[in-house]
Amino acid sequence: METSLRYGGDSKSLRIHAKEKFPIAANTLCQLNGELDTRIGAPNYLNAMIRYFYPDLSASIGVGVQYNRHDKVHYNIRAKKAFPVTSDGLLSFNVKGRCYSDEEFKEISYTGAAEFVWNIFNVKKDQDLRLKFGYDVLDKIPYLQIRENNWTFNADGNRKWNVRYDL
Figure 1 (cartoon, helix red, strand yellow):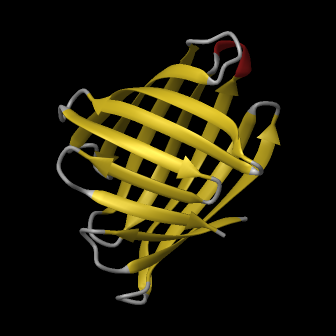
Figure 2 (figure 1 turned 180 degrees about the horizontal axis):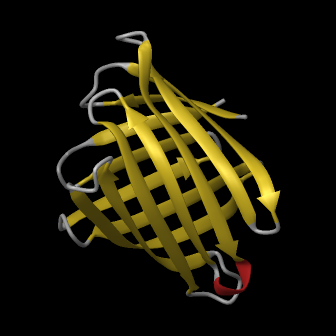
């Protein structure tokens, strides 16, 4: 199980996130994840998703259902495609999108982004770095991510930020 501690500037609370992936078939898995908000002592959300990977295309697609304490149940579909920029695959251009729907399929929303991801291994001994620069094309918001081994820092053009530590 993958677990992490998360803190965001807008929530002012520490959240405990857990994720587990169960292989179903070749290139297919069931991913379960959820988050506990320590301020209120209750889960923020619980999510179940079936994900299928196309390794030859560097692409994936997922279909799932999510329960969160505010909006109750909604469904989502997500897809991602990576285009290697360098021959070693350490720099890539990614295109990704997601569609959300409420339980009656009345309210539908979309997100989409394009991003450059640069993986740098052994910056220092046993220290890897990932830099991600992206643009949310629907909300017209740039964002960045800096990941160093277990630490991740995310920020966007709306001055929203969060930090994560993988346990």
